[in-house]
Image (cartoon, rainbow, N blue to C red):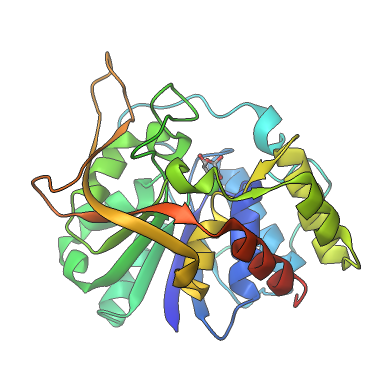
Length: 300
Ligand code: BDR
Ligand code: CA
């Protein structure tokens, strides 16, 4: 069973990743949710993390707010068209009534890892600012993190933000470089694989069959997110912790392009390169992944 912290910027697909974790208590113990700037501003990603916990009646999972901007370059946020102005598809998901934690996300991450060395899996599914700052503030945690499983980058395929960059890495490439070069055991879910994990029209229809109110909201969010087929980027991370046999990959050293005149935010992959290799996921059994998500969301 994986003990995890999900570091996120909800975000519609972040919300589905959280719901999938809530629905999988046998495989996943979610010790906390930390939030970061990304799909929307920090106050909104934090509000959304709280709203999603309330939606699933999981107010027991604490939410900690993290960094409100990237380390070096403040970035214009993603247009409202992708995740809606509120970040959850502008569906009027009710506000949570329970509070955010007082501690900063970076300190929560550090304290949790120090308290349980070797036990914690970090799951960044937004920009990596919080994780990078935790590693900078308390370098000793690097050796005590069990693994990092993240959504971000595009190792062997084009980006989705700048030509060559994926959104999470592009927002804070400096943070990504700190994390990806840390030598911590790591599994990467980049666009190489996540753009093949999609909700097609037929799959949407299947989800809709006998859907509970919670599922109806999740479906409406995903419909907003993907006008044609919707990519399940972030849920791949939680799905991997539930059933790793859904995925396959290769090992490669990843370097982030920080040159502002070049392919800023690109993740360059070198197989057999110098440095610590990262397990880069390249294949998904998307039909089995869909079945897993369909079955699990029905449990909530
Ligand atoms: C990533 O960007 C965000 O919009 C999604 O939540 C996902 O984490 C995909 O590029
Ligand atoms: Ca995200």
